[in-house]
Image 1 (cartoon, rainbow, N blue to C red):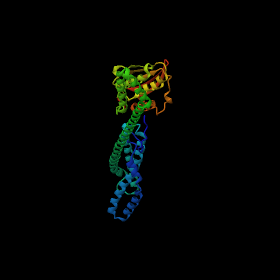
Image 2 (image 1 turned 135 degrees about the horizontal axis):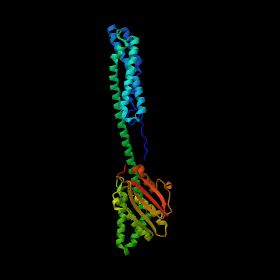
Image 3 (image 1 turned 90 degrees about the horizontal axis):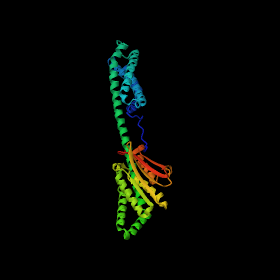
Image 4 (image 1 turned 135 degrees about the vertical axis):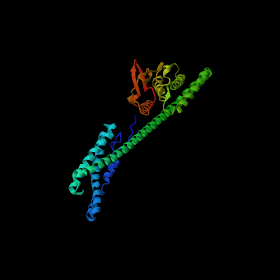
Amino acid sequence: MIRTQQQPIDPPGENGGKTYSAFKAFCRDLWFIPIAAVIVAILILVIEHAHARIIAKFLSSFVYAILIGFPTALCLNWVGFRFSDRFPRMVFLIHTAVLLIIAIAGSFTGAFLLTAAGIVSADDTFWDELHSSLPICLVITLVIGLSVTAYETLRHRLQDATIKLRTHQMEQERANKLLAEARLSSLESRIHPHFLFNTLNSISSLIPTDPKRAEDTVGKLASLLRFSISANQSGLVVLDQELKVVRDYLEIEATRFGHRLQYEISVPANLGSVKIPPLALQTLVENSVKHVVSRHTEPALIRIAAHQHDGFCEISVADDGPGFSLAAVSPDHGLGNLIRRLELLFGEAAQLNVQRLDLNTVVTIRIPVGDAK
């Protein structure tokens, strides 16, 4: 899989319960509180008694706001950071419990401080002050706290969805790029001067003796080059279409190698609609032709087979070559490109394996039956 570097969400959280930017920004901007407290104290001293009582009420509200606002900002951020991922469906329940505890504790503390300082009316006791302030503190704390929780949750869900969409787009762009590289690489191998020279020379030699086969070979060459250029932009083609390209390629090479190239294709008809990366099977066959058939003086047999089980399709290409290791394959090689495309299109569900069976080398593509990512 492609690993993309994502910008961290502050702090990261799947459900948005971790981060409370509004609260933290509010905490950072509370530099004015000491100044405001001094101004209010001066007003209480210099304004007449009636107006001072109004200021005292304001100061009481200010004290409750400080005693509840600061702990709320810190605790919600701490609780969200540690528990949102563990209990994603209980974010609002957890935050509601935290808000209730903070509101009750702040109300008790505020009532005690205001009563002890004599800011409230002399006729009001601690319990009178608590009884009048607690309901208001609970309502305001829950409304503001849960509103911020809902806002941040939705905001972070939107951010997560945006990141996932961008990641998917990057993976798709990478897959398209690799597909273009594969088509270009395949096209370059087809139009390699030696390949064209040998093919055209074979066609030329067939014209006097077997003009029908010469004409068929020209058509197969044109079909092969056309497919290399215009492979399906979606990154997948049906197996029947890929097999046609493989047959054309093998027939073209057969005009060059003659009896030295023999092949068998054993693919059930019901697997013809299975989707695979374009030029995937052809890449395996071409690898066998280049490294086995061209180096043998005796006939070499290439076997192509496919079968399906447990929701996966396994397509194999076997030859009697000496074998090789995928660890030694360069990323720029056709097989290296194929491995990367399989990872991008199917993730860990797809595999490319090489093994030795009865003196034969078998290369197998294992892909899930169904759409790619």
